[in-house]
Image (cartoon, rainbow, N blue to C red; front, side, top):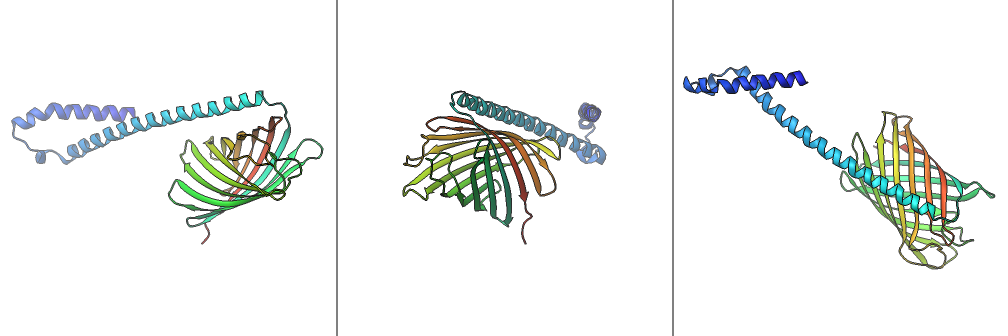
Length: 288
């Protein structure tokens, strides 16, 4: 490529040097050889491409720098929260994510089993189900529900919880890095209490491909209680979940993820839990 650029620059220089001769002899552009005119066109095109590549690299470098700063801030914040936590537990969360679409209509179902390394081991089982609509190439609107057999931030005994939720998803896919932002608002109802709890969740996820089969996934999600009710124990900051893991592509539509998640809970006795995360994700083909 460098040899080609040097050759083109040399030809361009010689052509420019010959311009006085052409003018002196009243030669017009039409008298020039078609090959020379084609070469000059290639020179102009090459200059445009070089300029475009320069600015593209500059933008990519700036974006990568900002993302690195965001990820560093996420994990420094999480380390600080973990340091002040009074209680720690080891957990394992396993989930299956099944998603697909009918044109611009989206859907997904996600059952989850959550265990804790103590007696009893069972902590929580929940199922998420939702439908969405692709309003633009990078934007999605969703609504759905969650049925939970337990609530980690609630008083003992309020084991059954029902949630309605709405969310906005923004995603930016790139061969070097994909970014997904999800903003979810939840209306939560314990079946043992009459009052509703409202919670806002914000998650940012980065997916960095390593090869055609493997990628690194880093995410952080923060939860805020929008009101205080009798059956919720946490303060305005409900919890924070920071995750780092590896995702393997098993087939065209199937992925397996494994990683570590730190869960900070601002219960009266604050918790910093260490979670082994297992996720089997299936993206179905578009239905006809």
